[in-house]
View 1: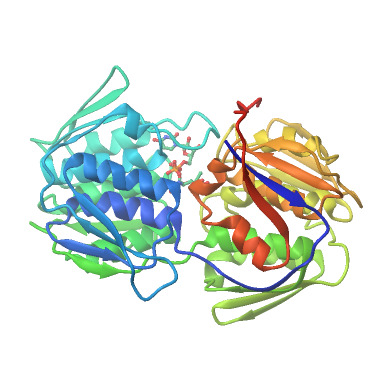
View 2: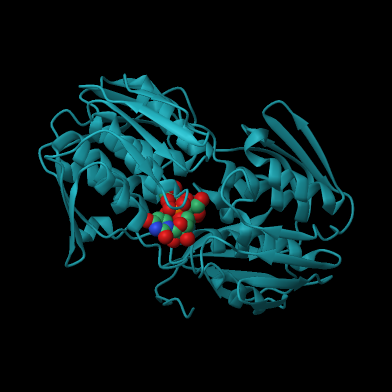
Length: 431
Ligand code: EPZ
């Protein structure tokens, strides 16, 4: 088990470069299964979830290799021309939520698929009924048995697919399934996240004919084959948001680089209420603190372009030291509050009932030993440790590595005192 050891009280100063988006790379990696050619994804951080997706591609018969390109992170070479298998076993699927995204791409390429139920952060039940409904609406025969999804695409047909909820993963799955399905398919009520647009752009770089991603109707004209391409995915709006929240908490003159401001409108609106200095300058945002933050008021998570659920946990860290009361409502995942129990150990004042939380900001919170419950909860605990009095030990930081690459190094380069330590003992999540 690995932990962070943080000595609180530092201000963040300097420049931090935001990495390529985890939630773009994962569906794009699934999309590589459709491609009968060589692909080079540029500037790919070695998020553990990316490494798990590479293992899945290799299990199917694909090849993946990190190579040094012109960016700080290496490029990732992928070759799925020789995909021979169409199954994803439990020991691989259970590692990441995005394993379920391979259902659409394996089906699209092989017309048959057997994929075990996905894993991912423990933030709710996370069913896959909307994914399966989309496959059935395209003529797939789907059997859900013994923890596996068996899908027969021999009678696959293009057509209209209505999603009962704008699920990000289901939208991506259906887009990929329709890409190699002859005829025109349309997805109604799709998710509109920037990562959906990024997947469309990647697939179109390989010769797909997709339009409308980011809007309320996506149209896919099936093609026979996809060729290889070189592609750089968008920057990670959630990592950017995490650093901006850190800047609102303890930024002296923090320059967040490689940010797409358009993707963080909701967060920027909230942070501007905390009386910090926010300067947006092209793909850089400069944030600094001149006094204790004022409460941002209320945050209610919603599908894009609403406030992102992935920044809900980090907002608790900001609210806990802000002047005033804050209201935080989580509407997307019914069990995405496990970080609260850990924050209470640090002296935070948080009350919760039926998905609605009230945070009373405090002048001081205190270091403690806490356990990471999930990826974004871990980010919240790390931010809280930066401002807590004394030192904080954060256990199970491997969960943070799923979506932040070298977080401790980035924070240390900004003046924080964060060290990664390897521990013998294994702390099972108490939450
Ligand atoms: C994606 O998860 C992201 N993961 C999540 O990021 C993100 O929180 C989420 O979208 C919402 O933005 C990746 O892209 C790899 P959903 P996904 O399907 O696709 C329900 C992070 O921290 N639902 O949009 O799983 C579901 O239970 C991760 O980076 C069904 O009921 O999200 C949830 O309540 C966490 N049936 C809601 O929809 C389904 O078939 C949103 O889920 C599918 C989803």
